[in-house]
Image (tube, rainbow over all chains, first blue to last red; front, side, top):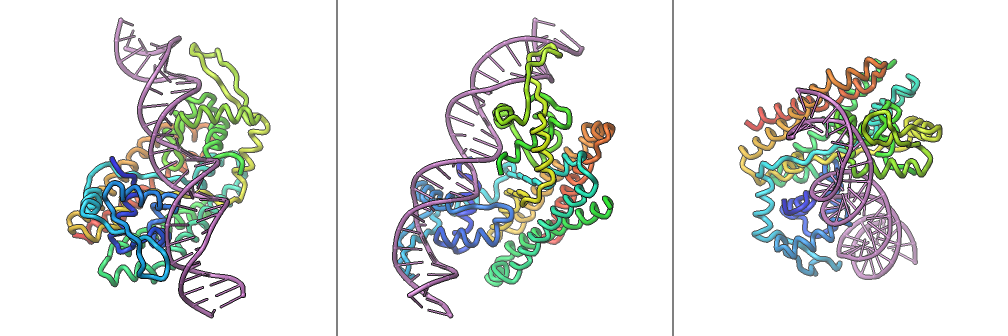
Length: 177
Length: 177
DNA sequence: CTGATCATGTAATTCGTTACATGATTCC
DNA sequence: GGAATCATGTAACGAATTACATGATCAG
């Protein structure tokens, strides 16, 4: 593999019509963040690197009042993105879940502490679910109207995912009681 | 926060009766790995650091034929572990899921490619589910017999989690068809 | 005797976050 | 005029993986 996964986030966001580092980050924060986060500290240096590699092309953009640098995918960038989208390399999957980690070691705790732990996990995922639901009428909607249905499908998956964990916690809370 | 989350994995594994870096890593690989991974490159240096901090105490262990270093929790280590288990600090939660990331950008693909993508995700989680199921009769069982029920509960959660994703993919595959 | 397992560690590298620094412009 | 937002970047740090290096012992 040549590029980091986060590079593909950038290439993908450019294809979705974002053009500056700032715009990419803004969209990441209301979409892919829930399954692939990225920060300015990655995005700006990576844009520069992708330009060196000839996958994107940037230029000063005077169209808005503000000084900014707009990028576009090059033909090579389009190819790189498609190659990644259709490749059958093993998929990176990584979960770090401190709440579940605590549960794993919770035999030494009092029952009410264990109950509290399930509850904390549930609350966290309820919060995440609410955040996702609040996006339903925002960027996902906008994408759908442009004829892109996958952002919405992925959002729906995210909501179902959070709901699954919430429901599981509820069942465990009931059992623990 | 003082210690990394991975430090608590180490402290927790010591409480569960593991005593060497090797034993800790072995148990991690068949248990917490699915929601909190750790490598030798973290475990050995971290054990040394925890000893400096007075949270664990290590000594040369001649009980087996092999040269090894056995660690135990100190009183301070026990306290640190309990404090973490019962603290209500925000829980670290992080998901990196390349398959879902690809789906997000998959509007540009042909329908059969999208279908293939859901299928790849499903297969990956089926594999993970099978791995977890194969642990049911192994370490989780052993823990249960020692009176620890949480390792099993967490394993069951892991299985249900993988199954949820598998089922979701199946529904999407049917829809995409 | 030989391969699997037990066992410990380090070095290089990658990936990513956080905090900082800076400044223009737009909206109220 | 002031706050929010747009906008770009860097430096320091932290977390974690991978690959390497080494070697003893145990089971067949």
